[in-house]
Length: 112
Image 1: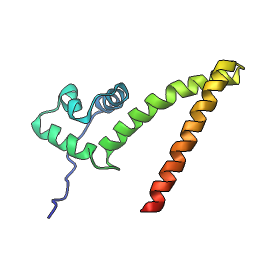
Image 2 (image 1 turned 90 degrees about the vertical axis):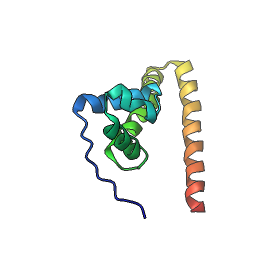
Image 3 (image 1 turned 90 degrees about the horizontal axis):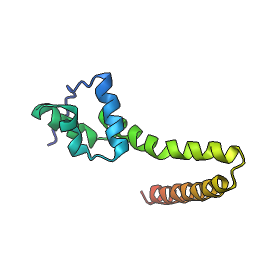
Image 4 (image 1 turned 135 degrees about the vertical axis):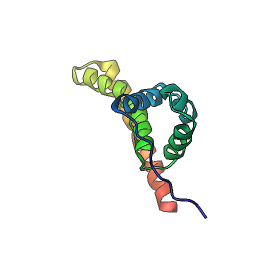
């Protein structure tokens, strides 16, 4: 029988921003507690929360990962809007990849 998770981990605003940054930089969930200066109990809770979608920790990590992906694409989009032909070509390639990813996700959702 799975014990209910009691969320007693309280991250301050700086730690929350650090989680986003560490995720954006590619650090693994298991590395983050030490880098945040968490003690053993807090580290265990952090890792548990990181693995549960919808928790604050999981969402901070997700935001960091998405920001990493989106920021360069936003800059590329700005260049494409200004008429940069290479940026337009690259943006089309990225848009096709995103469309393909959405199709695959939809197919996976249909299998459930």
